[in-house]
Image (cartoon, rainbow, N blue to C red; front, side):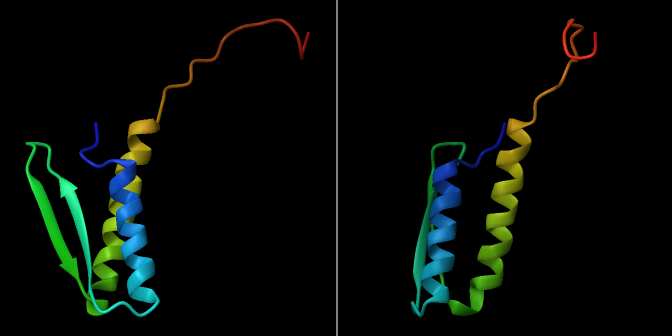
Length: 79
């Protein structure tokens, strides 16, 4: 199970957009798995770090959604 949430990904994507459109600094807040509250400030030079973080969060969330496919035997289409 991922420690990240969809809200975390949205915050990071919004921060990327703000920096890409001229903001001097943005803050992103996360709640840690232990209930702690973490707030980090990013500047335009950190845009690459934010993009990497967005990719990490997205990959983590997608792994949580992977389900097993078990084929069933039904009659129909190829009968």
